[in-house]
Length: 167
Image 1 (cartoon, helix red, strand yellow):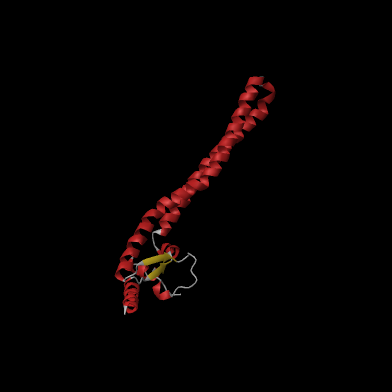
Image 2: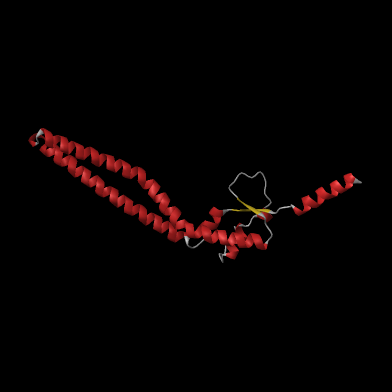
């Protein structure tokens, strides 16, 4: 009899503890959002600004090199050292700028995407609660198998008012 009670307890606990797990493809949702073109343009424009700044730095560097090359024979030893230091500093500045540009673009992209991720998150939470999901995984994560009936991607897009053309 005691074993029956323990068995009944475990069956009750396992029934109560059942979870409903869903997935979402956030990249796909982002690609379908009309706001993504604005984000892409913002990032592209920012990249062009960075390129223009780099071009100015390269032009200034080239002017220093040309000036040094043309006047090297007329410079005193101290003037030569000063110009060489200026050229080396300019090279270092250009190299640092190039290294930081990719990071700056990534930060700009993240900043521009933040409101879109927030919108997706709010919609996902609404859909998951409405459909009784206890957990939702990002679809890109390593999954051995997932039944597409539990993929919330299209439901989130629908909730956000985005119509998706069926492929």
